[in-house]
Picture 1 (tube, rainbow, N blue to C red):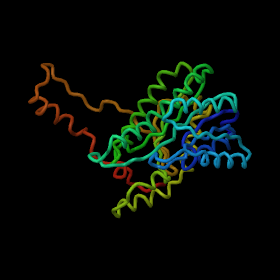
Picture 2 (picture 1 turned 90 degrees about the vertical axis):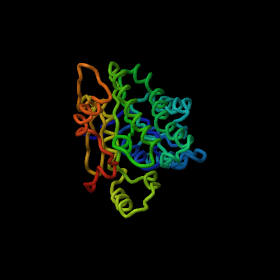
Picture 3 (picture 1 turned 120 degrees about the horizontal axis):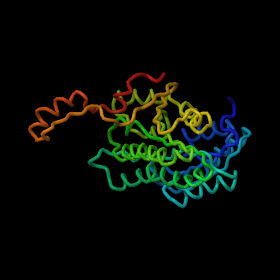
Picture 4 (picture 1 turned 180 degrees about the vertical axis):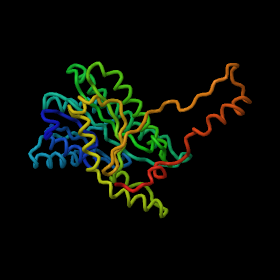
Length: 307
């Protein structure tokens, strides 16, 4: 099925490089008109914005015969998010899909994490996803169609060192996507998440001090951003709508696509007399402990080589 996004208009945030750029190129190749958003700042969110990265991607798309316009607004600014949608509507007449991909990293071990480290990461990832999604929501409601794709991470789903801000934001995005899917299902609007595994400019900033960390980063370099793009672009398509795909969490790792489960109870214990501290210690904990979640981190859990 060529041109699976024919006649669609999509906005992709953080699309000046890495996964965002690959998604923009593929969406255009599949027939979509694309708003390429990128603030043009540094990985840690510092620095003034520049439209240059977004413009370069638009030039690539145009050279390949596609349609794209740049936008350099920040996802942290609600008015900027509105301008992104306005850019789509004014240039292409509508908006059909949004991919919330923009992100920064400010990694610190928790006892050293500053309030600014926390605030900036939450603002870009979680508040940014809300701002852009909210700006598109009324358009989707009125036309009774639309699709969101939000980027989450195994740093939240599984866990990682030094990323309390990033992990919290990425788990918040899971809740946001679920709520959008529930609230907007009546209007044929879908919302899904992707947890990507790919070597990007952002991943390249993660320290590698030990041999194990260095080996992990070398494995990561094999997982190119282009491998993530097809699933994200597919989720914007009518084929994904016809399959009823919404409120799901997918992982993409090299040539592997995985489906994550949602949080649900795994064990329950009952005491008709009510629980005392002693009863919890003697009865509840031994019953539930075999089902406890361990302290493995994402790199310890996904131990197999990319395939």
